[in-house]
Length: 278
Image 1 (cartoon, rainbow, N blue to C red):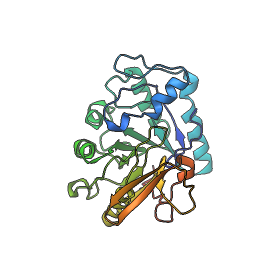
Image 2 (cartoon, rainbow, N blue to C red; image 1 turned 45 degrees about the horizontal axis):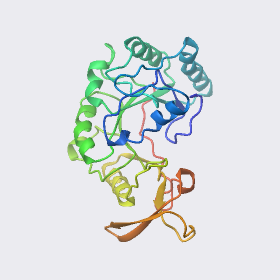
Image 3 (cartoon, one colour; image 1 turned 90 degrees about the vertical axis):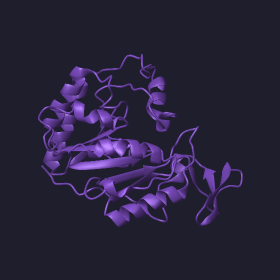
Image 4 (tube, one colour; image 1 turned 135 degrees about the horizontal axis):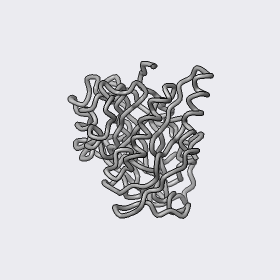
C-alpha cells in the first residue's frame, strides 16, 4: 500500500510501522485501527506490538523520488497514515531509518502529522537545525481544547511548513493571533466518515476558511465526511438531523463520504502552502 492514495491533500502515503495508542477525541473512531483489524492485525493500544516492514517496503519512496526528479515535479508523502511518527513507542531504529530516508529523497515533501507535538523536539534528528527543506510538520486539532494544547508545541519547532489538520472537526476553532504571523502556513479541515461518524457544523468549516483568508493561510477542505448539508435532491428517507447556527436552522443528512463530496459553498478548496523548493 502507499504507491498512490485517495487522500486529497497528498500524493503518496508511507508508513515506517503500523500501530498507535489513542490520545484524544479524534481517535475515538480511528480509521487506521479499523483497517488494521480488518487486515488481521492487533497493533493498537499501549501494550500492543507494532508492525514493522521489510527492506523492500523502505525502497518505495526512493522510487517515488526518482520518478519525481525525472518528471521535474515535487511529490508529497503523508507519513504516517497508520501510525504516529512522534509516538513515544516509536521503534528507535525505524525512526532513525526514516530520517535517513527523508534526507535521501529531496524531491519528496514529507508531511509528518502528529497528535503528540510535545514530543517533536526531542525526536528530531541531530542535524535538524532550521528544519529539513522537504519536511512539513503538522498536528491534528479537532477542537479548541486540543488546538490550545497542541499548537504551541508545533510552533516552537523550526520548520519550512507548519500545518493543522482539523479533521475530524468536532467543534469550532478560533486561530489565535499568536499562532499566526508566519508560524502556521496551512489548514486542512474535514468531517468524520464511517458508520459511527460524528457530524460537523458547516459553520465551523466556514469560520476556518474565513480566518485563513484573513490571515493569508492556505486552506484545504478535505471532505464533509458521512454528514453533509441537506439539499433538495436528497431522499426523504435519508438519516437527518437539525442544527442551529448563526444563519438559522439547517439540516444535515447522512449520505456517506462519497455522496457527501467535498464542495464548500459551491466550490472545492485545495490551497497548498507556498514552498521553497530544495
